[in-house]
Amino acid sequence: MEAWLEDVKMKINRNTLLWIIIAILAILVIYVVFFQGASTSGASSLSPTAGQAAQAYSGMVGGC
Image (cartoon, rainbow, N blue to C red):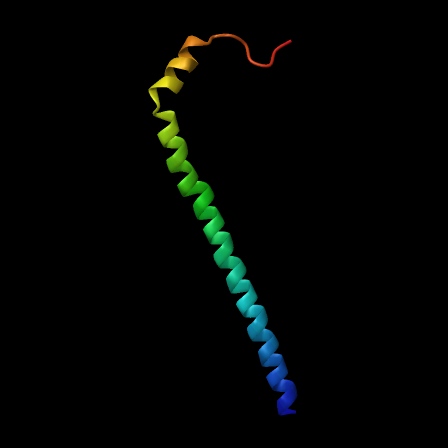
């Protein structure tokens, strides 16, 4: 009976460890997408050439 109980404990530990790893990876992905992505897009929007190009072009994009 003890061997069966140890097998169950080991399976629970493996499943728990797997879910912990998945949760950590998900948190890392969310951090990279929202926080690191926001800092790089903020830096590119402050570029003066991008702002000047957007102001200079007043045509329609993707129209027929």
